[in-house]
Image 1 (cartoon, one colour):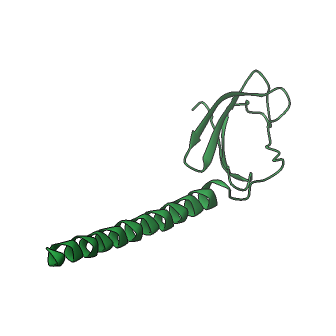
Image 2 (cartoon, helix red, strand yellow):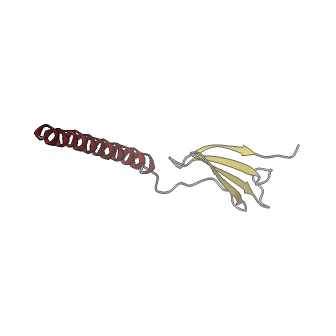
Image 3 (cartoon, rainbow, N blue to C red):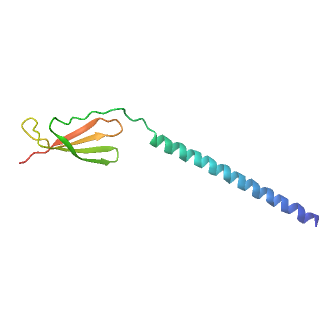
Length: 106
């Protein structure tokens, strides 16, 4: 009978050790995931970006794709003998203009 009473606490000790070990492992994994998530979301941004929308023109449509902001410019205004129809592509991380397309009728 004495032999049985010693085996049960030893098995419980092993079980308690495993549970504590897995809890610590889970806590470490959670801290790592939170740190990586905060790093991705809390990246440096920019304060103010100025984009070249000519006088008489207006932003007609705005779309975000990944790290890009795509602006469709239009309106009744004329620029350099053409019209306002342009597509501006900007980088949302830096706020800088990457490129633009001038739309013309053939």
